[in-house]
Image (tube, rainbow, N blue to C red; front, side, top):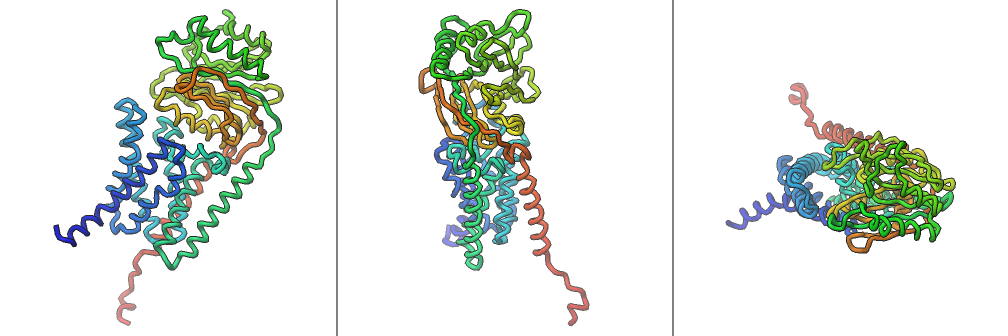
Amino acid sequence: MDEKTGLRWWKTQMGPLAGFLSGTLLMATGIFPVLAPVQVLALVPLLVALRRMRRWRECFGTGLLMGLGFVAPQILWLRLPPAISLILVAYFIVLLMVLVAVSWSLVRPAGIMGCFAFGALLAVFDWVVITAMPMWGTAQSFARCWSWYPGVIAFTCATGTPGLMFVLGATQALAVNSFLNRRRRLASILALAGVVGVVAVVDATALSYKPIGYLKVATIGWALSQQEGGMGTSGSFDRLYAKPVAAAARQGARLVVSPETAFAEYDDPNRAPFSRFVELSRRHRIYLAVGYFDTKSQENRMAFIDPTGDVLGRYTKTHLTPFENNPTGTGRPVLITIDGVSVGAMICHDDNYTDISRRYGAKSAGIVVVPTNDWAQVRKAHFQNSIHRAIESRFAVVRAASNGISAIISPTGKRLAVSDHFKEDPGLLVADVSVCDTQTIFSRFGYWFVVVGGLLVAVYLVLERRCSAPVISSPAEESI
């Protein structure tokens, strides 16, 4: 191979290699959320390669390797069933190939508006990822890892995670444009500074809220193997639940949350269900949020029990994982009031979606309890999603997990108390949470930012095509 042939080969491979590098960097942040800031640079290799591509067909190889770099290692890490793994790999590869092809049309002209259109495209793309095939909901989002830095993404209470994707895309496109386009360097830098400035102002505004009060809450969690007998024995109930409830009451907690399907109850008023819990709530004068499986209706439920032993409300799990086939709930909010604080409920996979959380946010819920049952490989990704729901809709989250991570999360996404039950003993978390009564823009209007982003991309593509269309001269003009 002579020098010219080698150089030509290298140029043809630069796009796919850049795509693979960008995909790998995005993958690393999905597995290790502490690396979320890496996403600030992850798309730079792809953007540089897109600027050097001459034909749109080159985009497909780039998108293919970007998809493999992003999704394949995560599938191996999560150890999902083969059929689900193959579906997810194909899904992400196809979507990323389309993303790269459309991105090439946006950033190749090297204009400022093209950079903003690229950011808007990422916002739309991420929304498509979590809605076109919502197997795991927002757990499929590229922005999931940023919940590890809640103060940085406080502005998503207005835009949701699509706004975060816009910022990541637009800022990196502007940065690349400032280096590769000398004529527009100053304009690109000013536009980049403008985006960062707007984010900083909205973050500061979102974080300046004043709580209307506080409520002390508690969560109980554990990691149990089948060999340990689960919660079916009286010894397990006393050790893992009754004693922690008593301890929470001694520490002043007003509400105690238990994990998803931690108990089995025949929920029939004629048979006095929840007798064990009624006795505990009366003895300790405390509210209980009990996750249980209703053996009568075969539903996955959560019940609120007050200090007098009355059942104030029941919530049925609405969003089921691919492994469940139980009857589903309606998704209607179930709210009770504890010491003047409005408290709602979701169950496990429900917090991987925003429809129910936004309804609670629109009703100004102060706290949402989330009984959860995970498994080792998904527990961290699922926990990241819970934090996003708190930030987006401005309520505290009290998360009780079996085989996962229990946590108490503030309305701004701060982790007040966390316990990974695979690393720590079964136990109790207690914390005072601040309570808000505000309705965020995202809770009220949902994915409005996606609509705006879609319009921006469409308008830009139309205008760019018109501007780049060749002017056909008439015969009269050619003869002059």
